[in-house]
Length: 519
Ligand SMILES: Nc1ncnc2c1ncn2[C@@H]1O[C@H](COP(=O)(O)OP(=O)(O)O)[C@@H](O)[C@H]1O
Ligand SMILES: [Mg+2]
Ligand SMILES: [Zn+2]
View 1: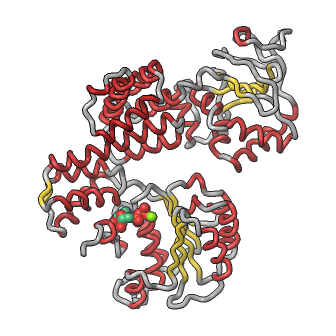
View 2: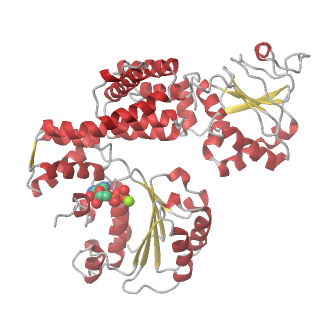
View 3: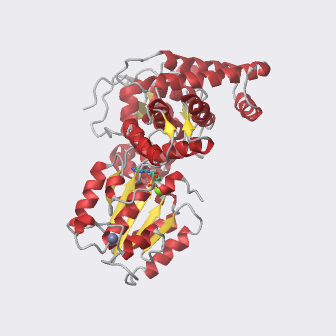
């Protein structure tokens, strides 16, 4: 019976781990020096070696080889047991499964028992970000005082979802997407041993398609090998065409679901794997053009499978024609722009974000729950505190334009701003990052005015429930809320404490382009 390549090709020694040298070196040294930590967090994209490395660590700390530098030896009883999946002191928990709460609770009771076979009991908790709050709390208790014989390896593709309380107790390692060259080299080795005849061009096509995931690359090769031992470039192109299509569909899905995080993530994964941003943009444009044809009643001119046709009909229906035209324009721009840009992905990211916020632009003010509706503002000019107040409290949409902020910031907000932000952070770090990039300017009518440096951050604040998160924190800290009005207030300086690596800093710096310097 043949075994799926990716399982068959799971690294069994440290040397077989591709593209994560920094991590392998650290773990190896820890084993050799007998200074292994009690809790690790392995973060990074899927298929980059997190589970493999966790198992290697489990094997190494329990390996019976005399010479510590040889561990794992894959010869001793313990190594063999791990390799065959029958080592009792390696416990793997899949946090994505619905038994994980019980598993983690159980773990608290069982953790104090000594290992059955080896020196250490190793707990691998995969997709740890999926744990429920209850399970996280149970885990936290365990991590607070792990017995000397226990080692935890938590693995996640979404580190931003891990509570700070858990992060602070783990030694963190960030796995990176595997570079194309490393993938190609690895695939060459696999093909040689699997007796495949495949040329380098086809291999690099696979590598690009895999977007940094060695697992995906190996699976694609596996898929091709199932058809023939001799793999042509043509055949590879034919198989992979469908895979790129998949990425395009995911982008359109994310656009229609207004899910910026998922969409940008798909874009980055595709690009990290080496896809050319302009080429990828063109594929998106092609698909959108087909949607337009379908929308205009010319579906017969679209040459695709019936399955794809159904998918297209669905996507096409979700768009209004003018909206669709704008989205096409946005991506077409990205498809022709920025060949030598210093940030090659930027035009594509901008196209995505601009296409995402199409329907947001008409709703500029987000009312607080249980509060009077705030005015709709088309575009706000730079707002300044302490300008002469105007009498009209009604704030009609068209008159707001010229209205200054009437009152200065309430003491309660000004004094507690930092505290509010801290509470926000616990709830949603993205909201906090956004708030870090704005200034509370004052009050207009009954609304608290937040000044953002760019349209991107402003409209992001207005969407995805960010205002709600803010209001919840405000309520908690000062016991009251008020409607929030987000405006673009240019020319103001960015607060010095903005998270330099955060989404917002990037967005403001790169996408908004309105801030000259953030140091
Ligand atoms: N860094 C790597 N080096 C070698 N093989 C890898 C690497 N990353 C992934 N693989 C391949 O992909 C499969 C799945 O990898 P895994 O460690 O489960 O990834 P992750 O846990 O990061 O999703 C492995 O069995 C192996 O075939
Ligand atoms: Mg894994
Ligand atoms: Zn061994």
